[in-house]
Length: 369
Length: 126
Image (cartoon, rainbow over the protein chains, first blue to last red):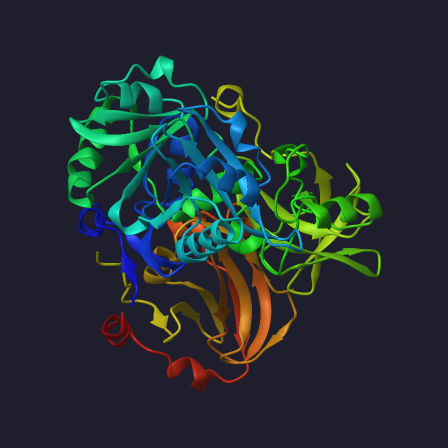
């Protein structure tokens, strides 16, 4: 059976069209993907991302379990801070990318949609293996997760929040009251814009918060945003989507996530990563900006002359640039900045240039009034 | 939401519309089809002179999220394509029956044109 957000009826009343994603029936769009996308870049948008997971770690060894199971040294993440990281298998490939928050009394982990059981089971096993005193709880279905994203997200949220958002820096988190409802607030998101995410429990409290945010954002032209725009927004910023970019077993080195790895602590998969680093010659996740017209899609082949050098993992038409954009793994030696490769779209070759991420820069809205 | 179905056009079950000009037909996608696709961002048109068969792929229309084939309503030859939709695919959304036409085909056999759906029959399947 397909799972639904506790706010499903609210989305229906807002005229949402729905789509299936990782076992959930979630809003795809309310008006149009492009309109919603641009609204987040220019103003503010409200997302229901309750398909995302939520796992709690409690017990005295929680920090040690996180350090052992992720590439992050969790002792560096202070109370009220969050961290983006990855959980690896023994062979160094990524199980999932997560954000974890140090809430003081517990760690809250946000795995991807449909990954809650896998991540919770893996962490439990790792805890047992290392004889750690930790309780791992999959609490995904007890929470509604909302994301308020866009340049006006702070102004919108401040109107109904009892916490001074000036005190919540990027990737910080805290317990807060929004629309008189207790929640966990974090300065995080998946759009590359100024943004916040709220974790609300029990789920039946969420409707009131959702509606209060839409009301508070009216003056700023707030719109509800579906998963369609969520995908194009993240892709313009070259953020990875676990089901696409990590499918088939990819290491953080291949995915270009070297920057999240703390090498000075022990973690599962470290040995294999060191081996791969020393050996070199691995594929690299590469950002490709189309020079010709065309919309690259997941699965399109990437060619250099007559040699297949890679495959597109995510592709779309960038609503901000009105150009095809893609990410894909490209063989060693072919991911060279400014080089032109071919993406094969229905037997037609579309030229695309290797570019530095992100496709859409931070000041896009200001530069394109 | 109701979509416009024009009485002076013919239709296919796969949501193409047809404007009949003797042996030549103009083809596009219906208001219903454009609204299902939303945000059309790319169109791949056939070459002029291409032979096409009834029910086979005529062109490709892409939205942000999806790729859809447009099927030829008849067997014949492509004699004209609307280059305007290549540069401004969004006109298919804003004007599916006029500015957003896709191709003109000269039909091999005019009886195929007569067998297309009329507006009343098309309304029943949408």
